[in-house]
Amino acid sequence: MMFPKEGVYVCNSCGCVKEMGGKAQVFTTDSEDRETTVITENVATLPKTHITCPECSNSEAYFVIRQTRSADEPETRIYRCCKCNYSWREY
Image 1 (cartoon, one colour):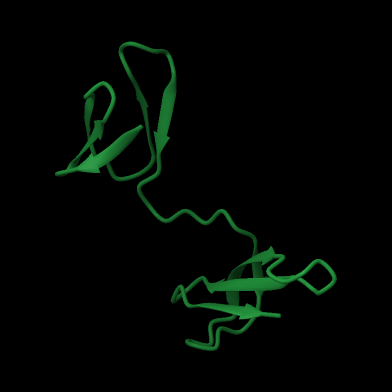
Image 2: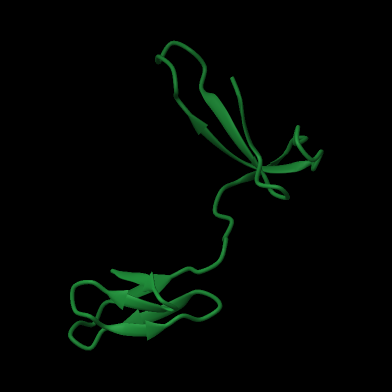
C-alpha cells in the first residue's frame, strides 16, 4: 500500500516511490502484476436525495442508513450536504 509522504507516494514494504498526480492513478510495482488505484480527490460514492440542509439550505445531500439502536427500533438516516459537507441525523 502506498502512502503520501513529502509530495510523493511511498510503499512501506518495498520502498517504491511514485509522484502524486491530480486525479485517480493506477500504479503497478515491478515485482508483482497487481494494480493499485489511488483516488486523490473527493469522489461521491453515496446515493443522493433531495432534502434541505439545515446549515446552508442546499436541497441535495448524500445519505446512508445505519441501525444505531436495537433491532426493534427504526434505522437512523445520516445525511451529508453536497455543498457544505455538513452532517446531520434523522431518526
